Length: 261
Length: 202
Image (cartoon, rainbow over all chains, first blue to last red; front, top):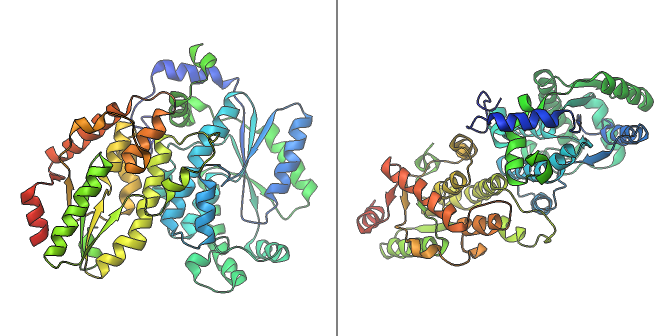
């Protein structure tokens, strides 16, 4: 609930606002996140899962980080110039996340669509924590937080991730963590950085109750596991978990019909 | 952490809700410091070109919310610290940061963001040695905001095109009220002659 929340808004939502969220609870869509280290097969599984959901009759929208048309060009230009410090990167990513949440994710969920995110907050948290940024500061920058209904975590060892990345080509400067390792060889840097990132992911997986999928299984076995997890999964009620983020969005962009009702 | 911890220079924050006046006051202070042979410089809003580049977004792109604008301001400030402020402080210079943290915080508070969130976001940046605010004149608030004039003007321009925000004058009045409350709490002072003299002699 808003007042009890450690981060974010100071105002308690009104009973009218909470009633609105409770009323919307049955109609809203489901937010599912695919998380994990690079080359864990998240995108492949997200695409397969999207096809399956559509075949089951669901309306599905996909989203991924650094795709907001407002902030993406800023991040891209700074990454190309290798000009980002960890703090600046985190703040730009938080701005990118907020813009995408308000203009892409929440409108789709409000309409009852399923939103599949190819990575969410957690990949930024893990990478930025591996860069030395405190998790509590990051949580504040991303507040009010928006929790997914389900997080599928594709667990893969650092060695397997490195092998798969090497097969795909050279990792990028920030992907390899060269901004903090100062190692010239991108593969050697990636190896060191990915060990730290996976450690951070493992901690997040415990704190935020990720649903772990073994990313070293066959593609089909992973897909079957996802279907099973989806069928068993429970929603986190908005009024309890995401009131601050949804109400802030509604305040700016009330979808007229629903708000009046 | 204060600016003195970053080197032997001095960080002076200059805050205000009217961009052109803020720029003029920073220029005037710089001239006075240079007249006294002090090594100094100004760090201005949008050195990273973040807001300038946002101006090139297609009209179909939804506008930024207050929270997004504040996060972008914070990222610009971190850029300024890394490339302008900290190096100058380490060389022993006086840096006039116009604006620094409080103008953005004032704008955030004016749009309804919590002070706790704002102070958390800006906790990455060092505290200035001293913080001053301009004597503001409400007559400046009439007419259209020019987004390149300053951060407050940029926010007013963006938010007045979005749903449903008060007119820019209301936002600026709230921002000014926040800066006045800082002065009441002695967290900043008005930039008057005596203050200018103190900065120059300090």
